[in-house]
Image (cartoon, rainbow, N blue to C red; front, side, top):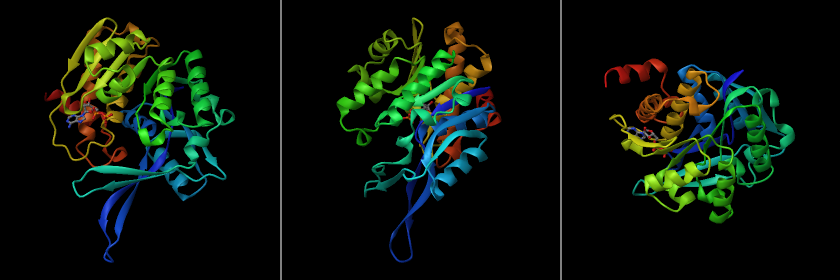
Length: 319
Ligand code: ADP
């Protein structure tokens, strides 16, 4: 049995790394993909995780497999495409330090995952199943994603969903909204930023937006607010849990670390219905997750920055 399995994109993020001595821009190869980051966060805290997805049968794909394995994530659900390369994303910084992305995904292996590729040994044997929306931008991975989520739900898994809106990856924002909402039908736990909440519900008002999501059937709505922590709606309750003050180096992966913290704590409870958790326990879970998210901002990168349980407990015991 796996504590948490996740399906989604796994790709290379090339981030700016200075200039060569011949004056050309340098890029650093980093593992990327939010669902994989969430799994590494959960693994590093001490739970059993597994990844479902596709990379190319190329050096980048093998590198990504090795990163997951080295971080304790089971890769029996990771497939290799024979004819489509691993997806790449390049991060560019303009003169003001603002980031933009170029995606090499026309197509990319991550979106080639088909229903026949799904590993049900993993999907059927997971207490929590997590997914995002990037695997729903294109076929065949869109149908494969929904099929896997449905199967996991039928087996009684708790379903976690982080839409992670990335407009350049969609044909149109209308398409993005429709597909993201389709994914909501399955979710027990939803993590969004306030911008994503507004995109889905049309309002940035936390109380109003989270109520709309709750009425759509989400049991736990988490709206993350960067350094300000997290607003939640759980059962009929709402509240805000403050973030931890830390020295921020790089916020990449903070949201994935936060969600990893939530899923880890829910696994610890050993329950199959999150509604059985008391409000005060849920607030403790979110406080813990805020700490995981905050710690992930204190180091560069996403996967290398995911904290261990001891690192989290050290900070929590001193606050
Ligand atoms: P995302 O990365 O998905 O946009 P956020 O930036 O809201 O998500 O970060 C997720 C969580 O990580 C926050 O709810 C908070 O707990 C923590 N976090 C993020 N940025 C900071 C920060 N600057 N200081 C402290 N905690 C942070």
